[in-house]
Image (cartoon, rainbow, N blue to C red; front, side, top):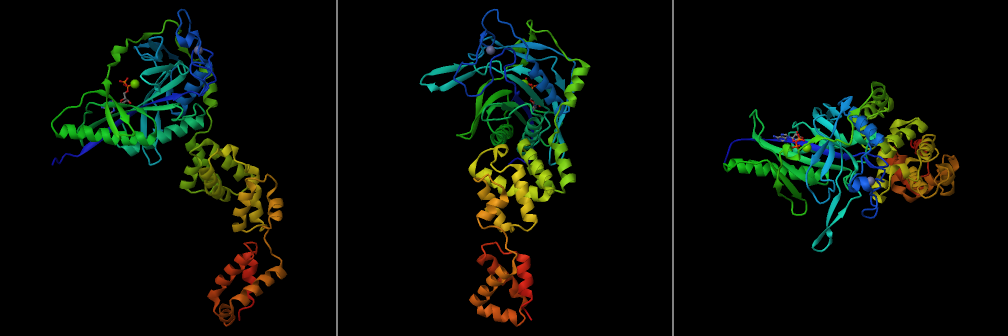
Length: 475
Ligand code: ADP
Ligand code: MG
Ligand code: ZN
């Protein structure tokens, strides 16, 4: 048994598809899921003589992403050709930024504390897609994705555990979602991760050789693959072996990481400046305008929720993982004037309903305004908190005003003395033993009796009044 303890070193490369209507260098649609090869033209099919024209919106979104990540945006960047052969790469090169990327530096703060540095952020285009499981014995090529606008975010090798890699990715995704630059959907391929990992003895100053795991299609798979690959490095070193720089593939079904091809050094790509595109020059005023247009980011929104609505850290965190949730919550809080109640409803009933039935919060059948009206109805004593939950579910299919629905469904709280006394008398008659002991001074039975009245009234009795009426009967 070795006594060396090993440290995991991870650096992530994240490819993010920008949320544009058209591709990076042509006017083809970026719509996901269209029939194969429908969204193609001479430019993205690489027909001879076709020339790229840079999509201004893609530049805006790339710059906005860079600003949201605290990067330094460079007023001059250069597109280059990254040459390699692949069947789904008709040009034989990808237009990317190499020596002069649009942004460098930057960092992602982790919720647990600390931050991971960003080395660079550059613009590039996507390749097409090879489909191996459509026809037996053949590979199909879909070029709809060819020329989609991407940014690649290269992270510093500062991540030290698989859990930290997951935390980094979640924090990064949140920022990009709030900045509105991408859908960040791993299922649709608009966020893709390559994970670089190496192992070194704890305290050894130099990094050892890394391997790069491609094709990771979920954050949990990133974490699983890192653990497996790290274990392989450690086992190799402990057996006296060495690790070669190499590209690996993760097989989620088999739960294994295996070698793909040996990794090319970057010189193999024969980068050279793209002759069909001039350098990208960004004017100072334009950059200032972009900075002003960066939407409020998750950390700022969280801090604001904490102070404006007196929420706990956990609640503020949960309400800011998705922009739509944050927007919905804020609308409920503003309309009801009660942030705490708004948070309870959004994280409780609303999230529960969405988790169970699917759907998006921005299309939830109970609008923020109607939920606020429900909160107001509870506060003024119109419905009990139990009845409010029943009313909430009724409101999912009935689009009327909460009070009208409550009235029709018999959910309005009853505070009328004669009705309450009627229920109390029934309960006391049904529970003669408890009634006698309560009358003789056993005060702790009051709770039991109130509970029975609430049940008898199907949650409609005003518990405060029931308590008062019952207390008056004890001697
Ligand atoms: P390449 O073009 O070869 O992919 P990049 O510089 O684009 O190289 O990306 C290298 C990635 O690998 C970065 O995310 C970096 O943090 C990470 N990395 C570099 N060295 C190591 C190492 N020894 N162990 C783990 N990750 C590393
Ligand atoms: Mg790279
Ligand atoms: Zn095209």
